[in-house]
Length: 334
Length: 193
Ligand code: HEM
Image 1 (cartoon, rainbow over the protein chains, first blue to last red):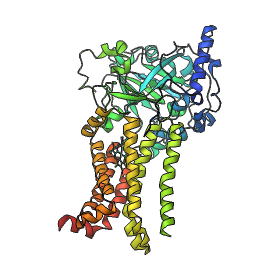
Image 2: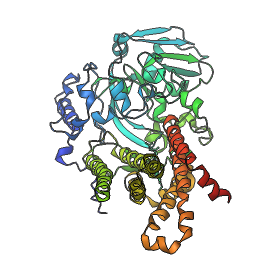
Image 3: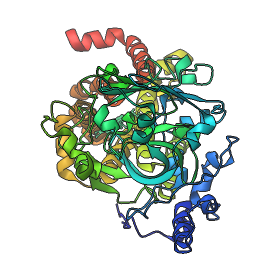
Image 4: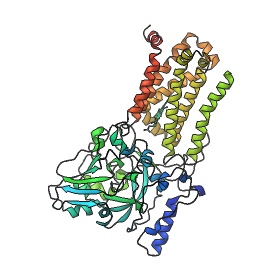
């Protein structure tokens, strides 16, 4: 069989998709000194092969442009917006990666309430508008590494988790942070039916150690590609912890609670031997059912994209976070 | 009659593959065409394999002996889908990392079981050649009873490959059990004679 291999970065004309338009505009605007990013939004390049299945673009879910501080341009090729918004593990809306984009379009994100409670001196509740106002928004381009050995590069919009936690003034007894997704079986078919939801006990819960949560990389996202989040990506607000496997980055959060004991986490409850509390990206610790030594980077390009790349410890963010785990055996605390 | 049925079977098996690779190469099958082709050909191979097992009970039930004549043809298509499934995994998922292939076969129980099933299907396909079949005499049926083992192995392979959902593999397991129960007496003879 003849394989015509194409370097991942050589794109044919037909493959020019919205993310290139997005980057070019951004560079132009940056050079002209713009900060606000409302005008970054572009219609996808016409006749993109992705239009065919990009139902998110045609959906009735309402998006809003966001104003934010632009990040440095990433050296890595971004994952096209249409792919970021159609390849989702969000079992509340179905098990297939394409299910959430189909089933989440009626999801109501406004009104919303996010509470920061527990071991804090100033408990907070943010309503929908507060999510975009309480802390100034900025853009961060992060690699996202799924435990299933695929990865993406995504321009998120949001703010540091630490900024929000500081506003609640945590007590010194607080050692961990526990997160919880909305529980609303009426809106989330996976929470209504164990068959659709993969037999998981909802609501989805996650957790971080307090020093992990206060690390500047830990991020709360309210948008991607310059607009509010699509529901399938965890609207209106989700966590992004780029040095950990994707399942730590809990979606559609309603509660952030500071606690003194290690909180339970959903995948760890389901299969403790396969998913630990820490879940740091680690090429040396294989998942029992697949190797973690390398990954497939999802960008543009079809079947012949040569996109398998080595996986880096802490997903390449070792300089920023390795010190958090100085004296820990990461093979034991996976 | 038989010829036209055979042509229909060929087309019904071939056209989905054409559609699949056309879409996958042009990147219109969702965000991750690699996952898509692996799942499509895996599920396809299992479906066709179960169809193969359903043919002789169906022939009896509907009193259409012609269906039995399709068994080799349909079985070979199950094998063909399995070949595409394996090649997808090697070419597009592992991208020719042969070391990784070997370590995956050894270390991942679901891949080990899948490989077992694949080897059995390969043997069955090879020995379906008429000349070899005739040479094998009685042993041929002995060998081809292993199709049951292969089918069980594939359902286990499916079940182990999945992160949390058990409904789909459970449904396949039920269908397979039902097909096996239709052959109770024959399987008993084979195992305990
Ligand atoms: C030759 C060795 C084999 C290898 C290396 C292999 C590899 C794989 C891989 C990588 C997956 C996807 C797992 C995932 O996405 O997590 C898979 C799933 C599957 N395979 Fe195989 N496989 C093999 C043999 C077979 C055979 C012989 C059959 C059927 C006749 C088969 C049927 C399936 C099915 C039904 C699935 C599940 C598809 C789904 O989840 O939708 N496999 N296999």
